[in-house]
Length: 201
Image (cartoon, rainbow, N blue to C red; front, side, top):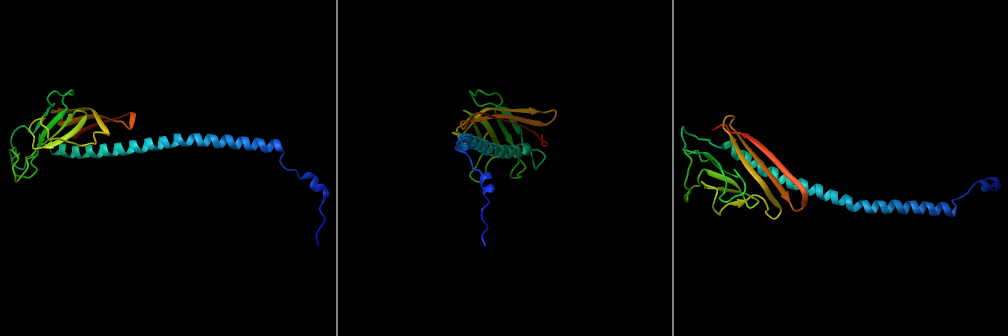
């Protein structure tokens, strides 16, 4: 059996007034507009973080490979492989001092540092240099000039602003400083320093 509605309860039940509804809609609109305006900033920050991570990752991988090369400098499988396993200088007309390094190690265990490239083998001399804001590498080189050097970074993406090598003979430490920039992050500078203990010199 249905119970009759209590008229007193009905009197106490009240809904939202028109003013309250309008105020709630206004607040909701403000919140939505604020959220929408924050989304582009969030996307921009996320994009910047992603680009920074990818570039830093690529640079660090290249520096790790260079460091491995530096640790081999002067290695010889015999008592005497030759002369001048390490030379730090600069490319002709280069703006940076000590921005090029030429080094040797006995990669093929021949007992000497092969100097001249032949059809059957490469030489044991390697190099890194700064050239027109590019970090370049080469093999079969004895000086920092020439045109057959290869860039280690996408030159349209990464510009090398500084590259400097320093050999500290008393501690057998080879130090390198490199500063890079990218057009994707014009206000960001990437600075790196590495120090390698060269045991073979």
